[in-house]
Image 1 (cartoon, one colour):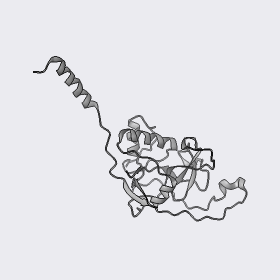
Image 2 (image 1 turned 135 degrees about the vertical axis):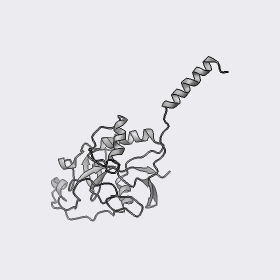
Image 3 (image 1 turned 90 degrees about the horizontal axis):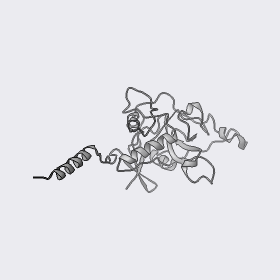
Image 4 (image 1 turned 180 degrees about the vertical axis):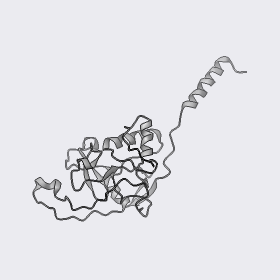
Length: 227
């Protein structure tokens, strides 16, 4: 027969275990991609509204996602770079495998999109460099479409050609003194074309695109090290 003190200790331990939740397992939907001899795990789809709302429920993200009929398959958009960093910090706190944003180079690699051909700028004046390519790039318009609407790469990465651009971890500022993304004023956003967007911008149609035509919508995709 257990002593009263031992029984009490077991009761407290049991109660604690009932309220403790182990970190979730690694994402089983990441697909391996190899390019230029490098291996990377890439999410086949952009982060959805439903996934974002889990972060909101945990009080780690702002409640800024649109209310749609199919949140489980609709990419979250209108998120700025700081919003994305908050989501990644929350995600990594509850999952075994840590994820991050891809670099622009990695995005171009797993998207199978080559470096775009250089076009003659509209102006040679360096003061007009921000608008030198304006109107020369194609950009798909329209509302945000459900995941899987657009074609997949041979590796199984979907919607690269869609109208949701994706944040990367690559700083777009031409300043050698900026050594980390936290102090970068604009980040590279990848999609139908490459854009430089202020880290504060959530809705690119409202302004903040530093070069070329602004993206239609901005969301993000996660990657993880292949280890």
